[in-house]
Length: 386
Ligand SMILES: NC(=O)c1ccc[n+]([C@@H]2O[C@H](COP(=O)([O-])OP(=O)(O)OC[C@H]3O[C@@H](n4cnc5c(N)ncnc54)[C@H](O)[C@@H]3O)[C@@H](O)[C@H]2O)c1
Ligand SMILES: [Zn+2]
Image 1 (cartoon, protein in one colour):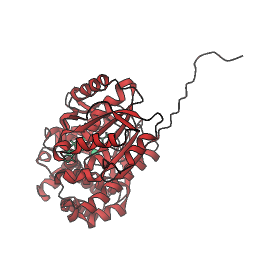
Image 2 (image 1 turned 90 degrees about the vertical axis):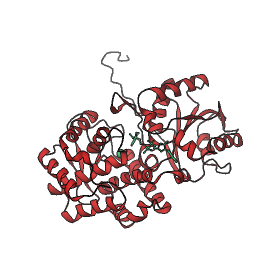
Image 3 (image 1 turned 180 degrees about the horizontal axis):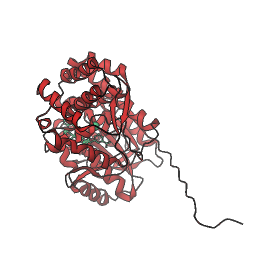
Image 4 (image 1 turned 90 degrees about the horizontal axis):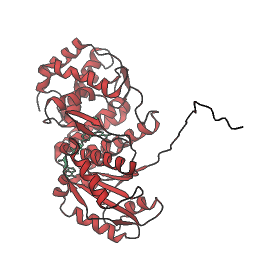
């Protein structure tokens, strides 16, 4: 007889597959990548709605028409349910529920079903908000992300998370929702302001320092070219950084971050807090750069990084045009609150990743506040403001 007793041991295993591509000029009608990607789902032509970041749309005025033209040229594959919708880009996109609600209304008005596609081209902030809306509508529909900043292509846009900020807490609400696919169009980066390119480079330095010493040396040797936002070097750095992030998510054993560790979040506990304390004046990449300087200094004082290695880290950040100090470090105690916030967000015991030599990591579960204060003082005294 069938055992119908309780408890019933549920065991659900869901494989997630998505591919991340790099291309140039994705909306040129003869570029097959996007059409081929959409055709991977059965049932073409697929209905779709497209959302564009306002900063991107302004910097690349013909983009919306090119996207619509591409869909017309591939009408056997994709049908836009309405013209592309431009939404505010930048951090405002994910402050509260506004953009999420707007996207949900557009999806409902277009009568999209769970098998329809959402295409979103934009920076990490808009991708986060549209990703949340897409995860919620019909309990989750197909999202093709087209990240348009260096940081979105090498980090924010390639992973499995989305989110919005609520009541002053960064990423307070969000879901783990892998996309259908990610298409990184390097040509989109060409209109990015230099400082925004450098935000993506900060993430590249972060992952290189704790994962890939050879990549760090490449960045170190090309620091001046990176600071000028030289296309070739930036494109190389963005691709390698994206690969390292993807490899970590795919093979790190904890894609939905159930544990307490975030092995690639070196520099982020202080980085997030500095962003928050600066009231938005510091962008994510800048906050992370200062956070890395602080934690590298700490790693040196606690024996994980040799003094000459620390000098290479700080020197490379500086030569890349990234900040290694900030006036908020003059009063370190409010910054140190970031340790508790970081722990709360991840859950469980505090776990902070530090570099262990260049290219490897160590995880520590406590940080000595006095040493951190001394590191903050050291950076204020010895590092110059950008
Ligand atoms: N979901 C994740 O896993 C994850 C990971 C890391 C970071 N993030 C989030 O990503 C956000 C930062 O994203 P970001 O660095 O891409 O910045 P952003 O999205 O804030 O965009 C920065 C600015 O660039 C403009 N812009 C976008 N593309 C452009 C282009 N091609 N040309 C000219 N201007 C353009 C935008 O309109 C905006 O004004 C943060 O909110 C961060 O929390 C998310
Ligand atoms: Zn980051």
